[in-house]
Amino acid sequence: MNFKCGFLIIFFCLVFVCPASAGEDKWSWVEASSNSNHWNVRKGWGELHINGNKFTAELYEVDDDNYLRGGENYLRFKMKGTIEGNKVNAKVTTQNSDYQMGTPYTGYYSKKEWKGFEDTKGRKAITLTDGWNFIGLTKEIMKK
Image (cartoon, rainbow, N blue to C red; front, side, top):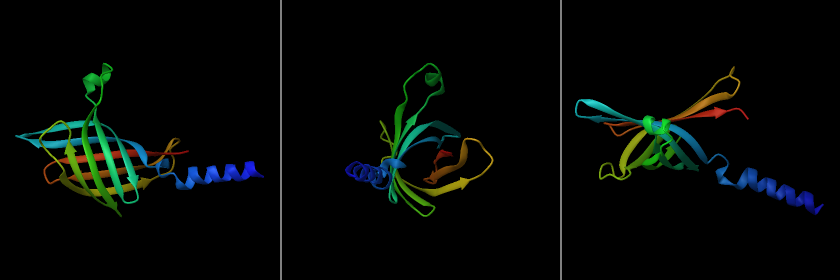
């Protein structure tokens, strides 16, 4: 009887109490920044942590040349913000730079689900802008 009770308590904690069951997700991202008559485009992967309506993210840049040669990814952006319904507000800080220190971004969260694919059942996306620059994050919703 004690074994069953202990198992149920551990199961309950893992499924219902631990906030990280869906809180730490790997997302892909792209950033486009306007620059003197052209656009700079960066991309990579990120870790997004959601707790209630608040989130934090660390976005790591992937340089195609370095990536193909086994090079390292490096932290490009840190974000803190809120998601309320489909509205997103965030502060974005560019790492190792004096540019964009806590710059406010606004945008949207969306989630679409579909049928007919073997391994995926949908996608989540966050799109943000500060009026000049754009950051988009996306993550597949995998079937279990």
